[in-house]
Length: 426
Image 1 (cartoon, rainbow, N blue to C red):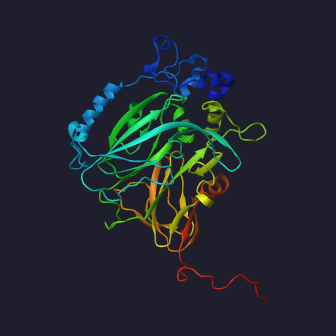
Image 2: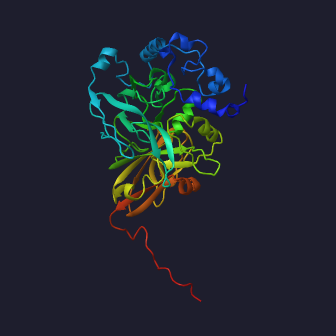
Image 3: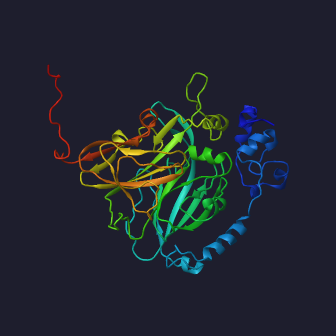
């Protein structure tokens, strides 16, 4: 047996990985016997490789049992739950439904900062899109795995106590099985076991938002396919607002005029023998090569919103002097250190929890890999601000940088050039 996946024959690996990923229940008995339960192909070709990427059958809890256990857990009392926590099934179905139109980041869906009335069911739709994307200015491509075609996937917004009802679709022309793990949800695997959809299928999942804050979601199909899907772009974020809206440490309300969602993404693009980035013509074709780069833990690109320069120049974020802007920042895989050059984090929830009071006046904040955080800043001066990760190598050399263009009148009391540049006297 090979010591690692890289000891396996590469052509066999590509044949194996080029097949469609399927759930075990979708294979006929002939395919189940002696073969991978995730692939309708002979996994014994690469036994060690198959185990590493989650292709070999594993004991699994049935969907019926998961739903039964989930229902029992939902009925248990909890000190942190609100007065509506004991809603029965019929009561839930009677809640008002709100269809949320998701938008491509950095923009966020229309929403109320303060909840009005009783909890609602927020209906959203995500479609798994396997597309080719250019990720830098020199034409480097990735066979991207995405939610709704964007990197990151759209921001979903609800209030504490609301229900999120997701319809997840996997079009028939896709190559992979997909699912979704909501870090904001409560239940084993974040809904991952209940949302596995093969190409041509859809599923509906409902979960209750009982923890206010910012959270990531991502595809998690099993084994090495979890990081592969995540670093191929299949992640996004959810913001669960407190019902009364955001507040500072003294419980005074915090309101914002604009909100932007910045999704930081690390890519691992293989190079050929000449040092040029490889290109692949179909999803899954370069898995073996990409896993080799991933295992070195050194990304080829670290970018905001799917591409170096995606939020600069004509695509820069916009604001005006006096406006308060909320920045939601996610990183599904690696740590990040957001910094606004020339500004600050007036209020920062760097761990993402709105149950905790925000930090005040931070210069740089820390977003842990696998999380999302939020920061609010009121712009006091016009100009072009750089919003970046303060790992400056990743910002400048690899692409993790955005710009905010702020219009308004300059305030000399905050900054002024006392003397212009001139020769040093003497």
